Image (cartoon, rainbow, N blue to C red):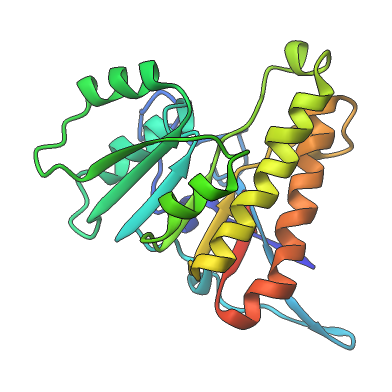
Length: 220
């Protein structure tokens, strides 16, 4: 069971992929906000909608998988100046992009940490996630023209990688997990969209195990 809520209030930002705070992230909507998909509890015919502040991202310590990508870059730059942010962990497998990102960051308080690793590697995820409170899972194979020819690789990264992130978060007791999906997951017609739809199902289902332990997982 899922509900839709305001993305900018969940992430605590209002910025486009280019870093312009006047532009919303994602598709244009009447209220200028994209949506997040979060679980609800259903008893009989009534759905209990916990106020979405219950799902607000806590930024004291946060890890972003695929953190050197376009969304990760925007999030890091938006969150760095915030006084409530103590540590941001950028988790990705490309050391060149990590080096380039490090060189461009304005980080006088040394809040950003870089972890080399792949979401396919559950043991490495456990190490990276162990001391953070919130995880943003943005790592994925995204190029539709490339992934259609390599569905086995998409399975390993977009589906099994998401499963690894969710499992590592449950084991570590992280309070918030936000999985980044795509509009292509709606009635998917390609490998990428199908992989993101499966990632959504895995995320929502993860709450069956994680929610009683205080671990909340949602899809954006």
